[in-house]
Length: 114
Image (cartoon, rainbow, N blue to C red; front, side, top):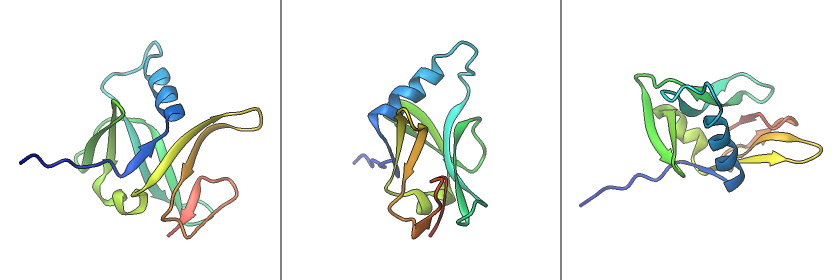
């Protein structure tokens, strides 16, 4: 019997397209993964981490929509069910985090409390 582990984070189609675009840029290091996680700080207690990084010893490796992703094992509890979207509108351009586990978040949308 095969065990299938579902990714704790969902990437929207806009996010997948933007990340793949960034990965296809000249000079992109193909040994890097998309890192999704959290870190202490921010106005609500925790901030999101999203960027390209090398794998570390305590990382879980996932593949989401064909994108290699690394995440610290301990971060899954904070991120389970979260959706990352990419907005390319006139008023705002960037990644947006929609986290159902956040009990509160700040106005900038990049930090939250659980």
